[in-house]
View 1 (cartoon, rainbow, N blue to C red):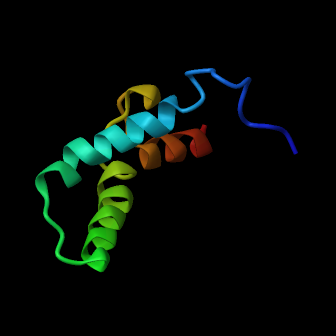
View 2: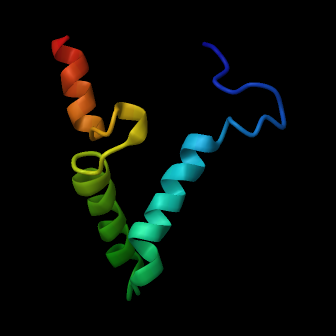
Length: 76
């Protein structure tokens, strides 16, 4: 096993996670009101699995979705 983080206080360790949660808040939760916890879980699951991973373009992947990028890498 290898440690996946660098030294304490390195601001780049959480950059990907912070970027994801900022997108989640801006694109989904900031304009939604959920009546139940299950409703929120379902909406967040759909956002991640159906939109973020399959349709949303990501600068890191040359403006492709993660699924498209992985498929391209598997073929190459």
